[in-house]
Image (cartoon, rainbow, N blue to C red; front, top):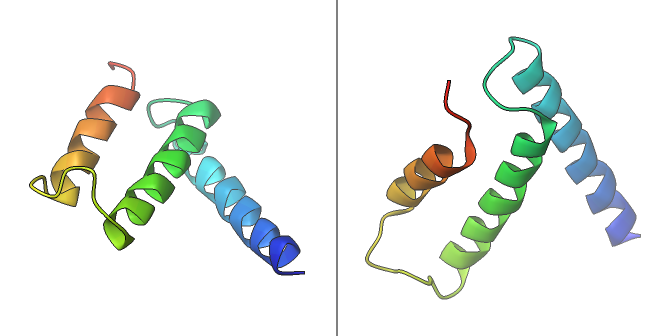
Length: 73
């Protein structure tokens, strides 16, 4: 029951994010958006529990992820 509700919420959010990303033809494709979702979910878990690298600000980590995941224009 909880799984089904969370799955619908997560998948509809992912579908909306993919559409938002692809419609204006931003860099990357569906796979990149999915990778960002995995990454952000992991970063949130990291921040809510025991950070792997507490000395690095989450914003710095996000900047590094964007630069590493997105293809060059």
